[in-house]
Length: 243
Length: 306
Image 1 (cartoon, rainbow over the protein chains, first blue to last red):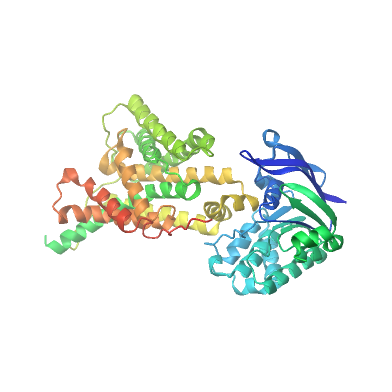
Image 2: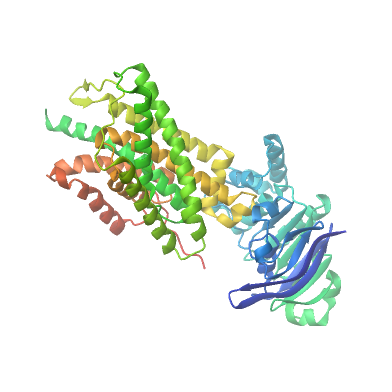
């Protein structure tokens, strides 16, 4: 079943076109990767899904419901879109640096009203990311980059999303930590049945983890296929895998 | 009276004055924390708070002698005035600032100055420009403690201010919406990603800031009387207090207000500044702070992100 459907969307920043007629879909239960170079429009696409960036044309459906329409027809603001069950881990993590780890998780659970559910979710997160449990009373700014990334993912999971969007989860982190984070993403997908759509510059790792992949170049989708097929695709190898 | 007790007296007076500055400074700092914008109409909100408080109080007690009922009436009129100012603050934000949220940064600032003129001139039109006395709701006989004299009015100011600040600290640190407010001041887009309705948080910020200004305005009116332009100087000084503490920082506003009150009360006699020029102390402090530590006492030196 289709979880997310993007239909011919275009996005511009002033006179600069960031996305042109992009269409794609994310099937329920899959991990889907979007790869592309710096500036290809990957983050713009994720931000458009949650309504942080207005569409010029096209529409985005989540579970069959239109969540994004062109600018002047857009009805849902970001906070209402995420309440449908979408969580975005933004590029650069954007943790609330002046808040403790625990307070960050509380913010992630903002839309949950039942305090006992929140406490239970927090315990689950501390089990899943033990380092966060050890640091729960610390200000988030004192965490390392990898810890902050785990924190941002845990915060996104607090709301129990159906679709998890990840923007460059490996950015600026050591290879071992990146591997660890991707392993966690795999577990989240398989055990918690969360559909994942991720954007990543580390194409090899992203495609290996994914069921399906898209390649974005200059704001256009130029290729799409199963993850393993893209890994073996000559063009992809040449442009993104350094082969 | 020896010099030591004289200066102790100045400090007590300064703390009282400073507590009022703090209450008003909180509104500046909370709004700045979230919108990065100085609400120059904030001083006039305190004027509206003082007027509405006074009118409600007078309607309740008439010319009654100070007693239990007048004290009760004072607190009732304070709550009513807080509610009136909260609604007014939210209304002003919706009408005058929200439409300009994505405009040039100068636009909301100019809009705020316009709102300020509308409020003070509107008050002059409705109430006239003669100043009114806010009658003490209690017997204001000074209490002598050692060499220091403290009035019931000063005790009221300090107790009410402390209660307000404790309530605010509890709200911001412990409640769900309070945390959402802190999160929004740290990162608006990410807060929206958490499901926080940023517009609602902004309205709430204006409501709380304006309600605190109403309290500050009522407490200030015993000393300064009530008149349409009363908010201008007190508002400016509270703004200075917010800058001293570190604008955007709630604790900073509390500390900055009390510090400014003490500096003003102690500095003027210490430097032999004549009474008519006392206000220069606050602005001299502002200049020094801007030169020496522009981010304020508790402010953070914000790095520009690439």
